[in-house]
Image (cartoon, rainbow over all chains, first blue to last red; front, side):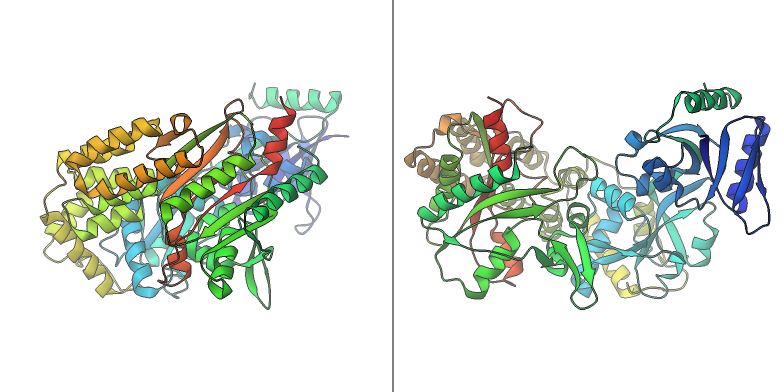
Length: 231
Length: 361
């Protein structure tokens, strides 16, 4: 048996993860054709690379099918209840920065804070006879945040992609989404609410607290942490 | 966790006792239309209830409590006055505490009687108290009507009162509003800029979405009006704080509230109702000296209660949720009845917790 390390299977996230490990003496690479999700690990014995979609890594960690995994903090917090009990963050990798924010139309010159959003939601509900819709795929994080902040009279509507377009398409009045630069939001005539940063996320190496490990695997994990200078 | 068969037997016994006291037995569906619950409780209910769906009926929820279906049943074909009892499973998501069950039994007793509300309050409290037997439980109560009356009596605009009323059940935002209306927190820079701008829409860009320019203008007008009215007096804010600070046994709490009512006559009727309720409880054999009163009791956990609220807690097990809870929910009925006035008060017991406590002794 070997220690399973889950890494995003494509794109910049994969490349940056490979770079991060490479700089620390562990070479990760994909093998075979571009379409084949197989990889190899050099620089340490007993570690197996598992290439997965970043969105599946939290679930695999929580199920104990991988020992270590690289994914965004946003995904771990959204998908895992009591996440601290299921995974342990070992290192923030310094890339994949993204903030989960709330944004409303620029044209809402009266709304610049959560306080304004709450008041606007109350009036909106009276006028339109339904609750102000916020489009997001981060239901749990957004709901917990707004409950904590005491915002009422809104509803979440699911949007798995092109969330910034929902306002223009009139399927939502506001959005809660991940952004790095805010460019897409601006291009869609949306503005970020200053006091509504729900979460600051970045790519993070997590250890599963659930995955079973024998003595040998534990030794490998220890060795890996030493090589990565995470002890 | 006690055995399911024991819980069911205990639930049946409690329900039989409520039936013997004159309540009519009712059953409700486990699957409830999500729309009604969502409309009542808002998005928060999604965090607490299990949602499912099919292509024909759309979204449905596994019954998070019995109150809503029982009220609906009563409105559809109940005669007044009415007393109902029920026993069955309710379902609650527990995403933050794996040790709490996501499915448990509730046995309830609900009274729809407009004749004498304080008598009905006392009746429900007494019958629940009686059903709990001689477990050493701490009983606490409150009355959200007091705070509602205090808000209604403030010397300020209706708009401010509406905003405060809307957040009675969200203490943090209620406090933030109160502080702002009292002029204790500075006006945010963005709002100050908006109110002094020559053309507030100069950098607005294109209008997108359903919320129209007219709605934005209406809110700006409301903000202008708001900025022009006097702050709440320190005295009034202090009185609200004094009400929220009342935490005593019921007779002492009543004394304190009577003192506060001298300076805030708006709450006099509520305080007088509290006195009559105390007398009614006493008459039913409740030891009111041992009954705690907290003015903010039930403000965070039970949004639909708007008058008398109560709970029974195991003093020895602060980790457990209350063994029984209840209260008056006229406002919920008003929403469900689309304006129809249906006074209602009720309470529920959790037989699983009761058995657990008995076993622990």
